[in-house]
Structure formats: structure tokens, C-alpha cells
Length: 318
Image (cartoon, rainbow, N blue to C red; front, side, top):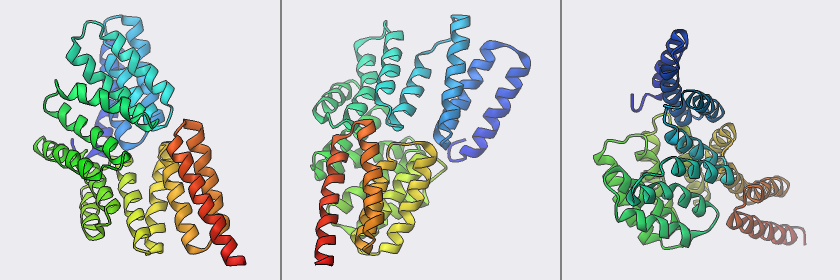
């Protein structure tokens, strides 16, 4: 039920309820995995984690239910929450359970750890894992790795190269009719156009991303965040505030670590509006989260903005 995640959740929950009534553990485990996956996409992350943990208990009891994919699901959520040590631990468990996997599959699984390295600012290590995996990737795997490589190049400031990676990924994703990933990739592309100063193309791309959103909440929040950054750059502060509040609302409900970046953007908007008290409040909140999850680039950005705030306040009160 691509694009109808709320309906998919309802059907998955019904299936789980039926499985529980049968008492057949294999069927319960299979239904739990389906519910966990849908909950992950609609933003019920804590409920998804609970389903994954129940699945693992059943697997331990039966000994015949595979666990490696469920550890991938757990690692995915923990990574988005900024719990990077937990994410790596679960991705490693996934790999350990696939000890008989060939080198090709091992390289593919290691890209999930590469994404953690990317968030931690270990760009070289992340890119190295991605490049090795890309050599053996096919289809959907290629699209995923191109996306991840684009993020690294964007972080390095190599915007043309990032755009190339994102666009290649987008073409593959469109060919696969993957409507869950198309909006987020468009948001990524719109974000690069923004960094390049191409506001009109950024606006067009981000609005297309918004029109294609399909219920995947984390991606929707990324779109709102980039739209806020666009309107902030154009000096349209009320619109910027409207979109950043939407992004923060979703990120906070998800307990996503990206809330830190969104709150830093809100601090920038408050600073532009001359609300120094609010700006400082959100700078400190963002810094606290970046420090908690260990993202040095984010910490540095809060310090830069704090310096700008002090300068503006000094000039205003001189």
C-alpha cells in the first residue's frame, strides 16, 4: 500500500491481532515485523522498537525465525534518533547473524554503519564504505548508495558532485516507482540548489517534494526544514517560521536528532527578527542535543551563530 501508510498500518495491526488470537508464534512474529516496518515509516518509532523487541524474544524462543532484518530495523531507528552507539551495535548484530554472507552482501550491510559515520562527521570513512559497496550494488542498492554518497559530498561542500549523485539516485528511484523515497530525494536536491543560491529552482523542487509527500513523517519534516531555510534566505521570516515549526513538531514527536538542526534554524530566524532571547534559547537547546549525540559540526555551528548573536546584540545596544 505504497503512499497509503495509514491504511497499511491499519491492515498490519489487524493482521497482528488475528495472529495473536491464533497463538501461533511464527505468524505473530511475521505480523510483528510488518507492523514494525509501517510504524517506522509513519513515525511511531517507540512502538516500532517494541514490536522489534517482541519479535526478537519470539525468535529466541523458537530458534528458527531469522533476526538479522529486525536488527537492521532497530539500527535504522536508533540512527535517526541519534543513538549512534545503539545503531552500530544493532547493525553489527545483523552482520554477525549473517556470518555466511559473501563479501558482496557484507559490503552492502556495512553502508548502514557508514551512514552513522557520516552523521558523526567521519566523512572519509563513510565514503570509503559507500564506494566499496557501490562496486557490487544493483538496482535499489545503487539508488541508496548514490543518495548516501550525495550526502557526504554535500557535507564536504562539493555541491555539483552532490547534485550529480542525488539526481542519479532520483532517476533510479523513479524507475522503481519508490514513492516513499522520491519526496525526500527532491528535498535533498532542493537543499543543494538553495546552497548554490538558486532560489527559484530550489523553491520549485521543494514544492514538488511537498506535493509528493505520502505519509512518511521523517522525510516530510526534512522537506519543511528545507523550505524554512529557503524562506529564511529570501528574508521571508514569517513563512520561514511557519515551516520550521512544522518540522520541529514532527522531529520532536519522533525523538529524531534532526530536531537539533531544526532548532538551530529557528534560532537563526529569531535572530533575524531581533528576538535575541529566543535565539539564544534555541541555540543552547540545539547545542545540548548536538553534544549529546556527538555531532561536532553541529556544535561548531551553534558557536558560530552565538558569536553572530553577540555581535548583533552589541551593535544594537551600543
